[in-house]
Image (cartoon, rainbow, N blue to C red; front, side, top):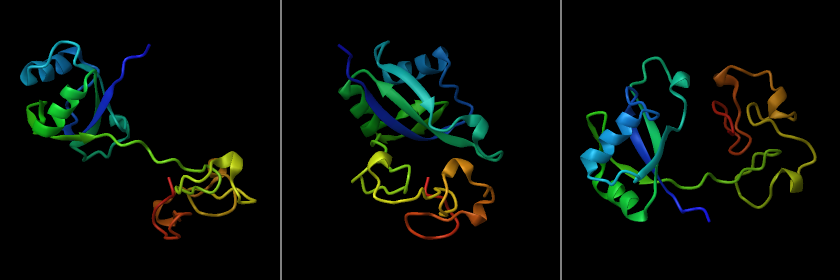
Length: 152
């Protein structure tokens, strides 16, 4: 039987924090007076190597072994890399059809009512993987029909 885990989104963590470091996690647990196995895992949502050069903070997901520890973190925050940060419950990623990029949750790609694939990057009729558009100014959202951002 798999034990239940609880995920907390921590925003604006200094990128100097190394979530893979046992010492860094132990420091968080010590300052919060958590038991040794309270925090099971920590990871950045987006890899640091993919962040902007001027970016100084990023978001991480902390995985806890108990509801109480997760709720304590949400209510009182934690000290991470010498900075007081607050968390929020990590909500599940919304379901999205990979054929038409609809977020309404009524269908997935295998049951999509659209005849052709719609690109999630430019909004044209081709698969997203084959899209040649790489300039964000030319992105076109297939959901809201607005230029300037992709559907993904």
